[in-house]
Every structure is written in C-alpha cells, then in structure tokens.
Length: 365
Image (cartoon, rainbow, N blue to C red; front, side, top):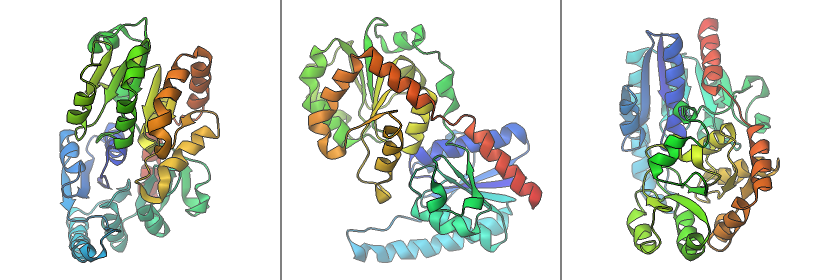
C-alpha cells in the first residue's frame, strides 16, 4: 500500500505526522510512505531524520500586511498545485493524509482530483482554513476536541485526539536519571518553561522581567528559550544562572524534562496540550496571539473551562506570568487538582485510532 502524508510548518504538525507514519509501519511493514511538505520549512529537515522520504512544494503563506508580496505567493501556489498533481500521478497513493500546514492544501486537492481518498487530522479546537477548505472531499476528519461539528460535517468526524511523541512516556515521573541528566535536586520543586520549537518571545520577556524573583524562590528552573532568543536571554540571566537555574535554547531530552517538572509554562499549541494532558502535568498556558483565528486561546480555554489549566493572556504575561507560577508551584493541593483534571481530557493511543480510520477507508475503496 502507498500512503502520502502532507503538511507541516511547525513541530505541532510534524510530530503527529511522524507518529501516524510510525503507526502505519507497525501494522504494514511493506508500507510505502511519502511525505509532502513545504520547501524551507521544518519538515524538510525533520522528516528525513525520522527515516521517511519527503517531496517539497514551493507553497507559502499569504502576507496579510503587504498585499503586493502575494503576487509571488500566488505564482508559487500555482507551481505547487502543478507539482502536487505530478506527485500524485507518479506515486499513485492509496490514500492521502493531511495534518495541516501549507503543503496539505495543494496535495490533498490534487489527490481528490485523481479520486484518491483523503483523511484530515485537525489538531486544534478551532479548525484551520486549509482543513475547512478540504473537508467537503475528505472521507474522514480526525479531531481532538468536542464541538467540531461547527466546522465539519458531523458524519465525517471521528474523535481520536492528537498523536504525540511516544518517547515521552518511556521515563517514570521523578526518575533519578532525569534529575541526574539536568544535575538537579529531587528534593526541590522544578518549573519547566518552554516556548515551542522556535521559542516564544513573550514568555522569554516575562521570565527575563522577573529573574530576581525566580532566583530568590526555593525552586529549580529549566528555561528553554528557543534558538532565536538564547543569546539575549543568557545575557539577561547571566548573574542568575546556576545549577538550579538552567537556560538553554533546546532541550534534547523532553522526556526527562517533563518527568521532573512540577509545573510547566507553555504556549497552547495543540500538540503541547495533548502531551501535557497525557502526562498529567499542571500547566500555565500563554496562548500565542500570532496564529490564525487565535486558535491557541480557544485551545487553552477548552482546558480552563474544565479547571484543568490556568491561562495568562499574552498581553498580561510580562507582569503576571511568573508571580502566578511562583504562587501555584508552592501549593501541592492546587498542583494535584490540576494534574487530576487535565489527565481526564487525555485522548490515548491517538495514532493507532487514526490509522484504524486510514485502513477502513482503504478497505472501503
């Protein structure tokens, strides 16, 4: 069987895509899987590292601030549509799976024109423009939140949750090797601050503004700044960096970081939330305002409404985020309540549930 998986742009799209591919391979050893991504985006590097071939399209997002720049964007879109058709024609997939991101639109539209069945995976609580556009032709739409009937035909929706990185579950909570990896003390509370694979400007500014308060609290901090911010953040934190205060651009062992985190500060991307639910981690969410349809705020509110997380708005974060975190991390009762509530929202075994739908569609075909 031949499978195309298309989409990407961020780790939030790429990790689920790889998880779906791995789940297909686990059932169909001879599966021929081809990824289709967008040139110069993260997937062009990450997918080959995961062991899968990928074709790149020149597709890009529209520039809403400078409309004249969109002339070249439209030209690249036409090139992408043509290349996507050639990929479908030559590869002859049995199914095309879209995980969101620029590349999935031309790829899945091309698949539909060649009567190749399609499946969509919508990660967010507010559906993206691409998936809404592709929904009418899709055989099934796998979602992670309730109430998605307002975006998609109800009869096509299957609740599966978002696939996550399986290696996160290989380490026991509070494992000694996790503390040893970071050189931290098991007797102290640990605050994990992450901003996604590229970092988050507001979260970094919020930490930088309250470095003194953090350093004077009796907790340990792992602060992942992202590669774009590391130089400035290290400079800001120079006199506070210690064995209890780690500042890094990238965390190579997120499984260890999550294992020892008593509280997490994070953006509200769909993949991050799915991981936090499955790991039962108390979290303060700071939704990014720079995403389509403000979907991260909607993701966060889905947890806040179930008393499963705290949300601090981006505009309030510099003043409120760290004081809120320092208050929360000292309350064992609140941490325990948030942990118990967030795990009830976890959707387990999502990749296999999506692959069930993939094989059902192929069998019907």
